[in-house]
Image 1: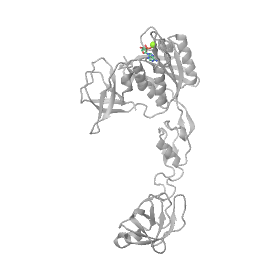
Image 2: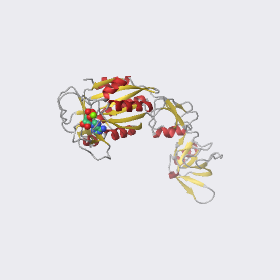
Image 3: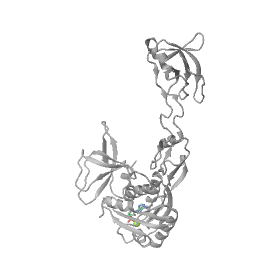
Image 4: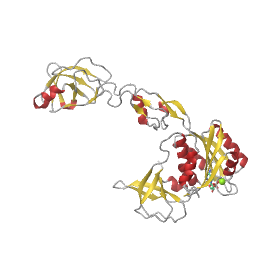
Length: 410
Ligand code: AMP
Ligand code: MG
């Protein structure tokens, strides 16, 4: 058996890298920036008020008796967001100002509207009602970004916050690593589509929809290559069809020890393939191959047929592998420390066990991991109920209360 680390290293070191393309910013969330974006102008572009209130000269307010409380100022203009006021603030004067509006010349502080009252009689005047009311409340020009600052570095995974950030500097298009196109094919004589009635010995093909969903959830473009029987010629032709249009392929089934496990046989004949027995449970059998494609080698992840194994294998190899192709700096799921909520049963067998668990925070904020009901590699209920996979190194039971590492699935 091959250790998980060695198996992953084999995959990682054989992966091609996708090229970069220009994309409208709004289509680039989840993708990785290939070229840095730098600011050409300051953000904010002008000094503006962080509150609704009055733009004042700090000396007038702080220097007045009682630190400004009771001071009455003459209101000479109003500054609203989106409008420039050309009236400067002189001694004893104030400009009424709204959040986001330019701070007028002469003013260096803002008194919040909550700390004022209008003087009703006569010309427009305002009374300061609290001592020390002249606050900073000014967002200086370039407070967030200065010209030349790197707004987002190459290698950044774009989030909605980056879309906002980049929009503030007027960026509408970015150069990102292409979104991977991933083909999914299921193999097995026993499979019929979920919509079909089951005949004797048949089961519904659950892996293909499951893997297509996992591909989409990972932010890749799923391509349904359909289902093929356990027939070498059919497997070969669907693999070549997929390699012609996809960046990576996922196959389900046909990589174990059975007489009809033909995916590994075909991959070995038509491509460059390594068939592995990985020291993990579930998902021990795994094949990784490269097929010739129009733009270079196309990785094929030969996932096992057992439904739990296929998704675990996807999580351990295919998802991080394809994310690596797409330039993700952190291709793997996050691993966190949790407390075993109960005894995790296992015996030494040379394998790392991945136990489907729920993960909840307790009153003190600690994460507690509990196995979900069914742990067989054919039992999807336990995986569907899981928040993560507890990683149990080879060895004996892990007692309740002990620390377990959990790979979070979302
Ligand atoms: P295999 O890896 O082809 O030997 O299949 C192992 C087990 O997974 C067998 O019980 C298969 O019937 C089952 N299986 C294979 N492919 C699928 C699939 N697409 N959907 C559901 N079960 C499958
Ligand atoms: Mg099969």
